[in-house]
Every structure is written in structure tokens, then in C-alpha cells.
Image 1 (cartoon, helix red, strand yellow):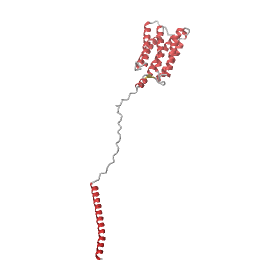
Image 2 (cartoon, rainbow, N blue to C red):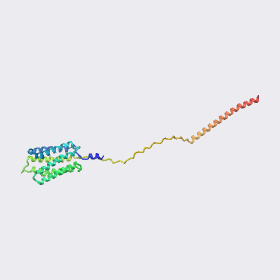
Image 3 (cartoon, rainbow, N blue to C red):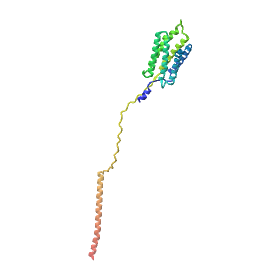
Image 4 (cartoon, rainbow, N blue to C red):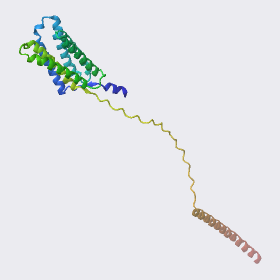
Length: 258
């Protein structure tokens, strides 16, 4: 019972969930925006590998894993999340603002750790993931997107706008994916019943023949019958004696007459 309960612990997502569909659509938009915004970097092998291939492959793997393995092995999505965290760390190091670079690196490490710890079973709630990714999304929108798109003196270029939009779509997708996570319910173990001793088999004793007990009335009737039988036998005996005496008397009378 304990082994079965351990197997059923963990998190999963439903493929038909609205949040899963939203996360998949946002990741697809992020890949398209990334490819459009980094067309000028395709000739540089290092930048192509780190700024294009790494985020696109990570997003594609996340889509495949959450759709195919989300119900039975959601932990497999840890790999693309770690790849995405590596991309954000590398992209932060390419900037000139050191404070912004430190903040982005710390947020990427925290997000990767919380997501990994949750699906590994060390954190038992999904809401810490939702909070972390929501804070990162708020930082991206408030401190990066709004100043960049609202700057009229130095308007943002198409490439930078697409890459920033791609990053926002990725973080928003992770917020929806975190909302889609569900925790498996562990069945309650049935209370142990008290142990019952083996039943003792009692062999039936052989039946004794019951001797019918005669009632006083039956005893009186039997004694009366025996007495009547005795009387009848006595009468028959006396009759036999009388019959034997009659011929003897007749013989004696005949002798005297002669």
C-alpha cells in the first residue's frame, strides 16, 4: 500500500486544460518572435547557438513534453526549463547595465530552482511557481518593456522589440503552465482492522441414543397389563386343571358302578 501511494504522489497537467493550451500558444509565438528578431545573428555561430537555437529548442521541447508526458511524467519538463534559464542568464550577461544583469541572473536561478524543486517533490505546492514567474513577468513588463516601448527619443528597434516580446511570451507561458499544474491525490490508507484469531473447529460429538423415559401413567398401564396377563394365565391354568379333574371323576364313577 505504501509503495502504491508513493508512486501516485507528484504533479501532473491535463492536456485539455485551458492553461496548457495558452502556454503552448504563447511558446509558439515566442519562438516565432525570436526567429524574426534575430535574423541578423544567424551568421554568428555562437550567438545563433545561444540566442536562437537554445531558446527555440527549449520551447519546442517544453511543448512536446507537456502535451505528451504532462499527465504521466511532468518532471521531464525540467530539462527545457533549465535550458530556458540558461538562455536568460546568457542574454543578461550581454547587457551593459550590471544591476539589471545581476537581477536577471538571480531571477533565472530562482525560477529554475523553484520549478525543479516542485516537480522533484521537495516543494508540495504549485503556487510558489506561480508567484515567482508572476514576479519575473512583472519585472519584464514594468522595468524592461514599458520603458523600451515608451521611449520616443530613442525608439526600440524591430529586432530588440521582437526579442523582448519573445521573452515576455515565454515568462507568461510559464505562469499559465504553473497554473495548469495539479497535485495527485494520495488515497487514504484504510485503517488496519484488529487481527482475528483463526477460528477453532469443534468436532461434533457422536449423538447418543436417547432412552425414552416412561411417564407414570404409562408405567401404571404397563403394570395393569402385566397383572391382567398374569390373571388370564392363572385362569387358563385353573380351567386346564378342572378339565383334567372331570375325566378322572368320570372314570372313578364308572369303576364304582361296575
